[in-house]
Amino acid sequence: MESETAERPSVQVASLPRRLGAMLYDGVLLLGLVMLAITLLIVPYDLLAARPYPHQDILCRTLMQLYLVAVVAGFYVYFWTHGGQTLGMRTWRLRAVRDDGSPLNRADALRRLGWATLSLLPAGLGLWWSLFDRERLAWHDRQSRTRLVIVPLAKSRR
Image 1 (cartoon, helix red, strand yellow):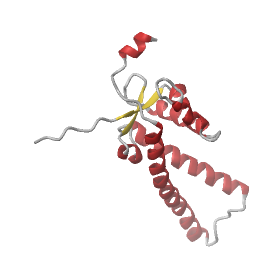
Image 2 (cartoon, one colour; image 1 turned 180 degrees about the horizontal axis):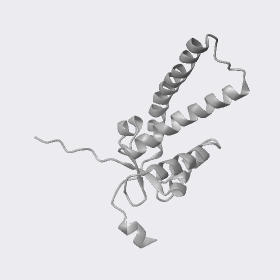
Image 3 (cartoon, helix red, strand yellow; image 1 turned 120 degrees about the vertical axis):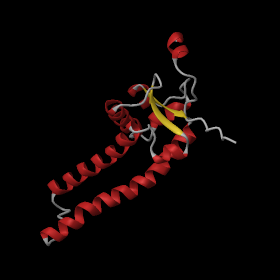
Image 4 (cartoon, one colour; image 1 turned 180 degrees about the vertical axis):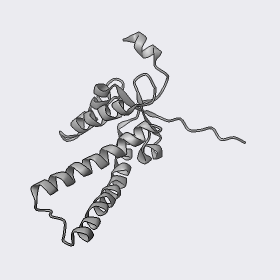
């Protein structure tokens, strides 16, 4: 285990307050994105079908929920595989990387998203785990073999 830690690049792992800040910021962005996604689905349906979207129908409701899950998953997978940062993560100077420091690919991002969802479901216990972990990793970081690292400030040029 020592040699594995020694080979890793020297980076600072994200603290719980930074993680929560980025999550809050991304939550606000996702709220707007989900509202836009719903509008883009329901308004054309209402216009083309000349009747309101059938919210009570179990099939329509299930399809809508799957569509919204795909929108949220697409948000994270896209940003994690294109630079490793969502807008909230960029604001809080965080980047999602693999354990070896390399960028996430699509499989890594999906694995991280799946484990993060499971990790956050029981009152966020998997996230609180980072308070007790010796490397400050959340449960889903360990399970997905990824981590959130702090991006160093760029030095200004004079």
